[in-house]
Amino acid sequence: MKLAEVKDTLIMRKFGSVEPENYWYRVCEGETESVIQRPWHMIWKSRRLLDVASAISARMNWDFDAVHVERGEKASNKELWPNLDRDTQPEAILATLQGKIEDGRKVYIATNEPDTSFFDPLKDKYSTHFLDEYKDLWDANSDWYDETMKLNNRNSVEFDGYMRISVDTEVFLRGRKQIETFNDLTKDCKDGINTCTSTA
Image (cartoon, rainbow, N blue to C red):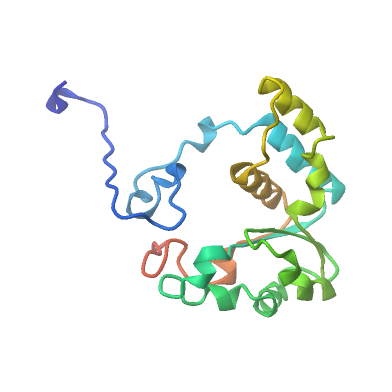
């Protein structure tokens, strides 16, 4: 096949060194982000995962605000994210939420922080909720577990990291107000220092 005769648009993606959290679906981020639009309208989320997200939202009476707090490896890497750890401490989060989310509201926190007690200081002002509070929706007695077993030849399916992120994201998007890590909590760039794109 001769590329000179191809009339379709070609997309080249160069792969350099391993980047933090650079999963296969992130190939359209970084320097290509401004020219490639992801086909979100073509991607269908699993009905079973959407059902879990809906059940979580229903348990909060569909009346909650949501905060995304990314910590993990990024928070410990001061070279690429110099302010992230400080900006995602409970006291800093409380300061950011003041004036944006009313006291006493239910707040769903979508986070990769494994120890949710880290966010206990927020309980003084908000009713906080986390994904793991709803484990019964995917445990061995759940409809999700039963349905995925049928699809997998009666073998159990782990509610893995990708599923957790999908449900966390979907619940976050259903919040009345959404506070994001890299747009609201910190001025650090999502992909590391000097990678922010101008929105001017």
